Amino acid sequence: MHNRRFASESGAVTAKANTISSKRGADRPRPKHILAFLSFATPGAFAAETLPDWAPQPPPRIMEDRLRAEVLLLGAELDTKLRVDQSLDQPGTLIDAERDLGLERTEWLPMVELTLLPGERHLVRLSGLGVRRSAQATLTRQIDFDDQAYFAGERVDSEINLTMFGLAYGYRFLVRERAELTGTFGVQITEVEANAVVRSRVVRDADSAAAPLPFLGMEGRYDFTPRWSVEARLQYLSADIEQVDGEIFDARLAVTWRMNPYLVFGLGYRTFAAEVDSRDEDTTGLVDLDLSGALAFVRASL
Image (tube, rainbow, N blue to C red):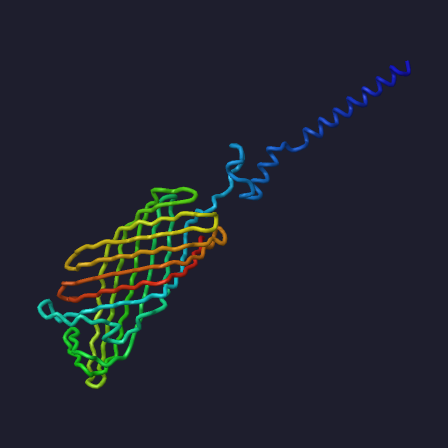
């Protein structure tokens, strides 16, 4: 009798314990809920390939931003040739600005780029570059500049300013986590201001001109690791538009290090060449600019 009572009480205790355990199990979060919470709270903590289909996916390694701002510094070596004609029948002297006028061949050039990304595959880029140089030199030969003649032995104060603005549209036809490839087209506007002064004869002549140059291009990026990447860009076109014969070539190669999804540092090399030959009666002449050198930049994603 006592044994039966003990067995009955033991069974009741066991049943009660099982009931409590089942209640605790019901209250306890399921493992998949814990995993889903952790993957949401700590993005990137779990690799995408290890997550089940129902779990939230971590953000991409490269931030899909809507605006990129890039500040660049180019240690450029310049080669500038300039000719300002009095008329189509009276061409001026082709001037080597560095050799004839004493302008510096090397300059540190700041540049700015803004890239808008309105969609997954589209981009719009605005860029700007300015070169301001002045010098004094004694001429070793006669130079005909517009309607003025500058004679050998005269001391000339000269100033040449080049300003370039670029607008480009791009379509990213290859978009992968580790790589992308983009085709571009756009226009590069080159403006030249030249001024020459001979103080001994109170001779002064200034001239300016601007020409738009269209271009086609290709650019791409490949990620070696989540932080290290290589980028390449090429733009080129030769065209004759409304009495202006122009050619543009722009190439850039860089290695970048990604500090975080929003900030990138890069080192590379850039070469740029633009030649504009105008046969317009109001702005007859030629500008031939070559610049190339090491490039450093920082890019912020907003």
